[in-house]
Image (cartoon, rainbow, N blue to C red; front, side, top):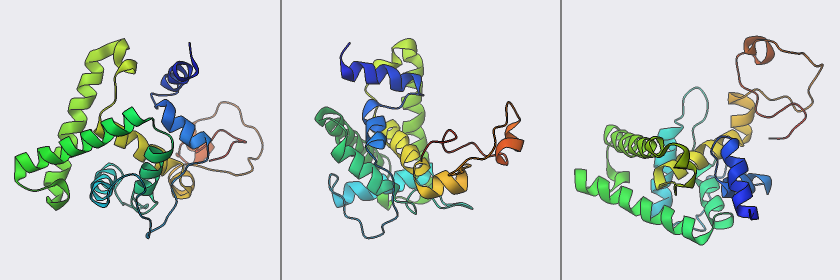
Length: 202
């Protein structure tokens, strides 16, 4: 088993994250708020589409949304810095097919659709991709993830490794206190999942 295969096995056990996604985080990639960022891998139009898809997946509510914490810039940087060429090409071709589906269904590109149309298209592509992975069963780990699931993976990773995601949505203590054994989550973290294992970093 080579290094890439080993990483794929480990990341599957960690919840299905792709090896490049995990490597990017280990190398220090995380979302950072920067309203003036310019895409380095994606075109301006592609970056705008990705930003809108990510915002549907993680909308602004009582806490900031994907665009607020810099998830689009994170996705662009991860694609440029950590993903191999074949994955980048698959992502871009999937993005273009997604936008083409919007044009075929509504006569306009995705970013020009109204909110319900955008949501419905994202939901349709997402559900179809999950159904395909579900039908593959144990072989799902060998599938090449489509644009919509790669975007979801990177959006979640970028959001929950951002300062907002780790400290406002998750429970985070930089220097943990005393050890408490098995206790209910509502007692351990005010009902929030922990951003990192105690003693770790986000």
